[in-house]
Image 1 (tube, rainbow, N blue to C red):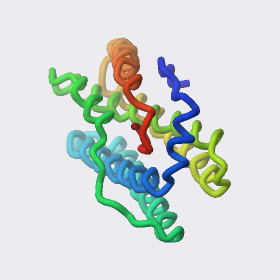
Image 2 (cartoon, rainbow, N blue to C red):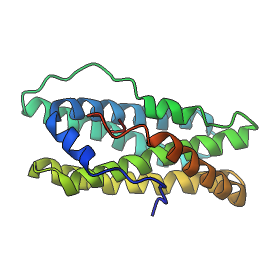
Image 3 (cartoon, rainbow, N blue to C red):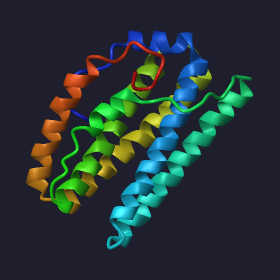
Length: 192
């Protein structure tokens, strides 16, 4: 569905499962950043009320996910740690085109779509490979949500930019993401 060039090695789930407390804290902060990103996109698109409405819904859903992860952390008696730097996302951000307003907005949508696509793929790996039944069910629900967000962001990019240009740019994003993701998958973080 996402055409990701390099799938996550299922052994990453074993690394994550060895330190659930750390993966949950990292995940919570990823959800907070996703909500913040959606709000940032809203500020760029006031002239598109229908897109603003959908982005608001995404931001609220991401905050709800943040809350759900935070509740799991509390319920399990874990410590909710400080925000983590996300090197993967920071490397992706370097690929955003700083051209025309139209190109920038379309690329920021593709940036968001890429993060959602990889997160969805990672949640699928967790669902298929961890033993914790509660988290399996939880990540399966989130996997579906992330797939919907991916589809929404890709759709917005095509709506706001030239669809043919956006499709070519998505192919470039896929190649770029493949070049950096090979350095990840060895830490107990969602994108690590």
